[in-house]
View 1 (cartoon, rainbow, N blue to C red):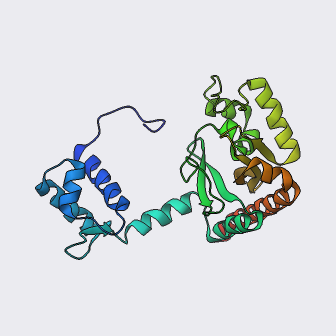
View 2: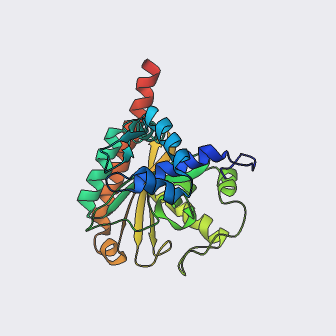
View 3: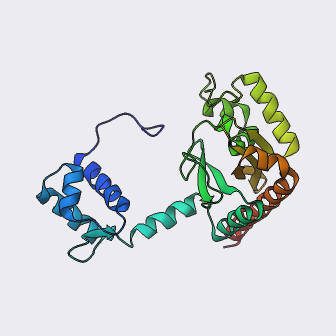
Length: 264
């Protein structure tokens, strides 16, 4: 349940429609109404009503008889709205891609959203994957990730305490910093250095490095990479330069958006 909303019963028809969209999205190249009904465990008549409604709204499309239904082009409007709300501009996408290519590591862009630190965009590859569960929408255990540490370091103390829920920090791995005083000391060093690095605090055999992204003076996000600990140790200076430069360029992109908004 999202923070700030009271617990209440869901609307069954809306819940079914949402689950139906995820079922269709998971299909590689279309899925029939009968297959959808089986997976949702609802009758075929109800399934057809849901399919018709979602097709009329552009969220689904009718494919050939044998292929059934696929995700509609209207879903792009939702995707575009989400990327806009997360400040994932084409320039940011290009910068994260360059970080991935130049660092030879998985790269991501994280932002604040609704009081949480959330991954907004990821660029990785088969050669340099970002391991699960790190993907768009991930927001857990920010004290254990480099992008989380960067953003925690620049929050007001009361906001940081609220985000961490004023309770014991979860031990994600044996290397996770779980002592509040030790974490605060680490965050002070991050503020001074302008960079955060963690080795296997979030996941074994994973090391991350991140730099802050600023917008009109304040830190609003981070650009980060994830790779194997040995690779980061060997190429630390090179990778840090790439990430710092990209974060500075991203800061300029977002600040210029604000300037254009004021002039509009």
